[in-house]
Amino acid sequence: MDTIEYTKFSAALAQRAAGLAQLGCASADGRTRLRRLYQEGSAKIRRPAVSSGPLEAVLINTAGGLTGGDRLAWEVDVGAHASAAITTQACEKVYRAASDHADVRVRLTVGENGRIAWLPQETIVFDRAAFARTLEIDLAPGAEALVLEATVFGRLAMGERAAHGSFHDRWRVRRDGRLIHAEDFRIGPDIAAALGRPAVAGGAIAVATLLLVSPDAEALLHPVREIVGAQGGASFWSVTTSGKLLARLHAGDGYQLRQRLVPLVGLLNGRAGLPKLWSL
Image (cartoon, rainbow, N blue to C red; front, side, top):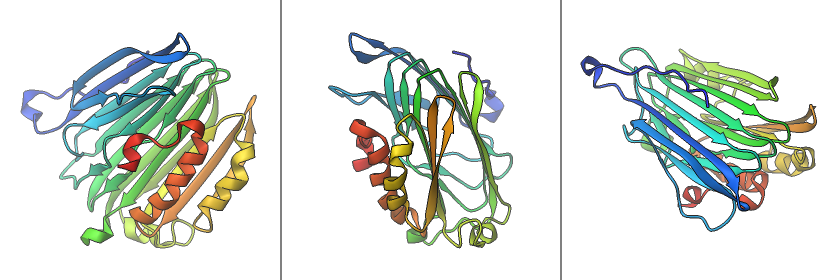
């Protein structure tokens, strides 16, 4: 596994959080088993006990959130015929940045006929936050991926709204070295004004993007559209020997968004269903 480069901070910058965590798994005796686990800094990985199904892993940022200058890197390598589901312990919070930006880099690699479900809980963005996330996914022939990122710009129940700041989400997905999905979502510095535009979110503050790369994707398009409803949309494309289903959702707050994400993830993740922490 190639390692994501990230900044290691000196003692003079000890207030900034830095972390790198790597997880590798492989198929053995009909089950997916842990092959490698590495943790450094504020990035930790825990594994709930499961008796069957994919290997489950929980990502934890022990810094308790992110702010300007923080750096996190997560790497997951799923071997051929193996299956893994990855989530987070809680919603990641991105706080106001005094300077610089918080940076998260994710690299997912899936071997031939393997499968990964990348299902972190929502990212909550606070006012004046600065955040950039890069998601790189490499799929071997026959591999499948279910990928979710959901973001809530402020917590209305707490009287908070992310009116200003910067947010950048960059995805690159490749199958057998060929680019099959690319997108860049960038918003700011006037976040509230941008979200208020009809072509963006029509005033909604909670948004989500969900991507399924699978030969079964086309058959799921109609039920996905029923769950997404009028506040969002879903489309399907044929890519190489597989299919790609992309869904986007928006809602008035995080609770309304979660109400649709739960059945949607349950549908697209098949027998594995929801990560256990999603139901707590």
